[in-house]
Each structure stands twice: as structure tokens, then as C-alpha cells.
Amino acid sequence: MSMKCGLLGERLGHSRSPEIHAKLGSYEYRLYEKTPAEVEDFLLHGDYDAINVTIPYKKVAFALCREVTPTAAELGNVNVVVKRLDGTLFGDNTDKAGFLKLVDGVGADVRGRKCVVLGTGGAAMTAAAALRGLGAARVVHISRTGEDNYSNLGRNSDAALLVNATPVGMFPNVDAQPVPLSAFPACEAVIDLIYNPSPTKLLEEAARRGIPNVGGMPMLEEQARLASLYMNANLYLYGAPGCGKSTFGRHLAGKKGMPFVDLDAEIERSAGRRIAEIFAQDGEAAFRAMEAAELRRVAAGRGQVVALGGGALLDADSRRLAEATGRVVFIECAEDVLLRRVAASQERPLLAGAAEGKMRALLAARREHYASFTERITVPEMHQ
Image 1: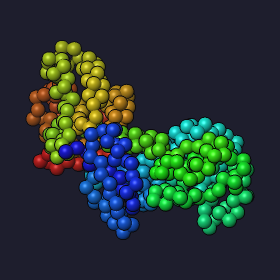
Image 2: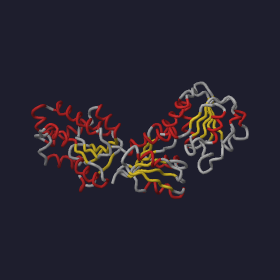
Image 3: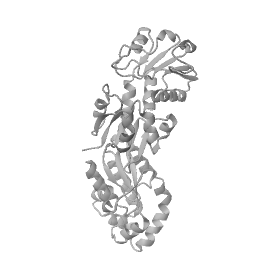
Image 4: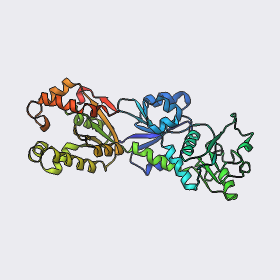
């Protein structure tokens, strides 16, 4: 067993996503076809760890997320949803980066130019935001009923770039074409987000006219690559000494069928000494250097549950590494429980002698640091 991942959409018979993700990681990747009446319940209660979301559910998924990335917040839709350990949803949008790959691939320079985007859905909004970010002078959406529509295309005949962000021309309706390129005589490049068929009728016309063009496959591959970082992610368990990272980590790894790594145990194995001996013989600074080096080695792996020491992410570089290679899950635990546990332990060199007073001082010193982690979970006593 591994991370349960997949693609959520309404009709997915044409999808190439399973084929692409099979090359990106060892996680399970399934297709989840859901009707509009089913999608909310699936997102909130479905049996998955991380999924891609495609039309028409990107805005629905966005609304159900407890937290989203700045890019997703800007766009108002998500194409990646991660189910956190506490059941809440986290969302990201990797489509924008994928679309920029298309713009670069077709060689379009949109700075100071007018661009036309066909459609007003999530993909269209993503394309428009990316074009504005590249310096487009104006981005016009063409819709069926808006001010700029398919009956007055001539209003935008001076557009330098045309983007099709509608499903018109997508399999199985492969003979359909959203607009004739004769309506855009100044067009210098055409992007069609559709990847099946390839090329579409729109792109075939662009090729006949000698206009640079690109289909949606590079976008699909790039957004999938970025989404796979969530699906291949390490789960880093972090928290104060005594919160139960190692015990819960073993339980979680067994439940998900993922490898478990205890960073402190790895340090001891590499050093050939107990951590208490490292502190006594070399000092804390030397231990932290060993800890950072061991984390760099462990972080090269993917799809692991990793229990970190209670100060492992105090180092800014180590924190950036953990957040770049996985999710940091902070384990919350009441202070009185922590004090009881560390008082009974002889294996915590920072707390040796007068453990309760030292623990209170340590928690006070790290309070702001510990509070800065947004994904948090309270673990049942039996797993701590």
C-alpha cells in the first residue's frame, strides 16, 4: 500500500493522467468520476490522501479547503487537494505553472499586447492571471453571453495571442473548433489547453496559416510533475519532546504502508553513539550539525513518514528542506502531559536534571517557533 492519489472529475475516459503519474512516483493513482451531487461528499469524506481536480470541480474544491496556497487564493480554484491527517483539506494550483510552460514553448511575448482567452472557467481564469503576470496589456475573455462573445469576435481582431480554455474540440468531439482563426488576423500564436486530440482542429488551422501553436500536453505534464510533489511527499512529524512523534509515526506508517524513519535513530546509527553521548562529548552545536546532515540524507527519499527531533527545524535551512520535500505535521500535546513524559525519561540530554523546569523553559523559548506550523494534529493517547 502507498499514498492513495488520483484524479477527480466528471468525465475522465480521455484522461492521460494515470499514464503520466505512473512515471512520477510509486503512489496509487486512480480515476474518480463523480457527479455534481457526489463531489462534495467525496472531497470531504473520500478515501484518498492527495488528488488532482479537473473540470468542472476546481472551484467547488477551492471552497472546501481549509487552507490554500497564495497562487490558489489568487486564482480562486485548485487542481490539487491534500487531505490532512486531521481530515481538513489543503489546496494548491499547479495549472498556472503548467500554462506558463505553454507560453514559453510557443515563444509568445505578450508584454504590452492584447490576448484573447476563450472561456470563463477555472482554466480560463488561470490562463488570464498568468498572462497578466507576464505583462499583457489586456486580457479579454470570450464567452457565450458576455460583453465579448462569439457573435462579435471582430472587436478583438487585433489580439496577438489566442488561448482556447474551453472543452470545444476535445475528445470525443474532435471535429469541433471554437473559433475560426480568420477572425484574428493579427494573431501571432495559438495555445489550446486541450491535449486529446493532438493536434486539435484549432491547432491544425494555426499550422496551415504558419502560426506558432502548442497543445495542452506540456501543461498537463508540468502540473502533474508539481502535483506529484504532494503525492510523493514525505510526512515529517514534528513537535515538542515527549509529544509522541516516534510512536505515532510508526502507527501512521503501518496504516499507510509507508516506510518509517526516526531521525534520532538514524543519527545514532551514523554516529555509532547514543544522542546523550554526542551531547556530552561534543556539545549541542555538533549534534545539530549531525542532525541537519542526516535530514539532508533522509529528505532525498520520498513517500516516507519521518519522526523529527523536537528542535530539528529550528535551523532555517533544515525547515526549508523539509517543507520543500514534504509536509510538516506538528503534533500538539498538553503541557502537563509533556512534563509527565519527559520526567520519566532518561534519554533527553537537553532536559537532564531538573527536567520540569528545563522543559518549561524550552517550551517558552520555542513557543513562537512551534506556533508557526500550520498543519497540526492532536494524537490519541494510545498512539503517543
